[in-house]
Image (cartoon, rainbow, N blue to C red):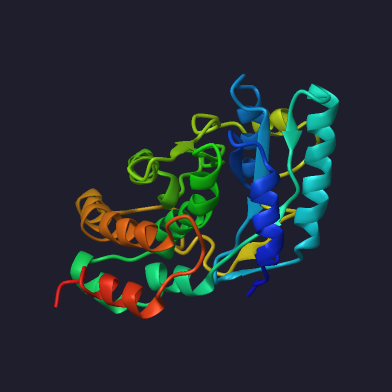
Length: 266
């Protein structure tokens, strides 16, 4: 498991020194970097604060992220000069928060909804963990989610799921920007970045990767079960977590856990 955070006082300094209209960029793999480059094409976007966050199941060498950040910063400077800025890379994760959304109640979720995958709730976590940053800045989070990856479907990036994730974040007053959502071709994604970067490399990996796929590589799911999971579990838990976080990163764990348990059927 990867877990370390930028020091709280440094995070506070970064937020205070960033422009009030700064957008928050989810910083992870190739697609997230491409999404930041795509967001910079918007005239309203002139400063992006990149935030790297990890799930409780990720592993790898975080030096890859630092190198990718350096390359992206150079690409932004080469393209825009002083007109647009990529901020310093901030690291912020919360394994406990990831666990309470995705790991604590697996048996309950299987019984209540008939299926379980951590990946959808994990993407909700990745957006939620950046929410305090976005609330204090320009109220925009940039996400690199795509509906299709060269023809491959990911359960956590189905159109239904991406619409849902955008709607629950926007209910908190923050826009979830998905600028490369409709890009299907990985080569187009690489062109956005500006350097050769194949999918799935040069960033941390997840032990649960592909957990929703059958042995033949297919992805099968029941839309009714999926909708019930989104509407009856993830939507309300998203709301209580967003309320607990507020504008900061400290919250009452016991109070949050009790609120989550209250959402589950006995």
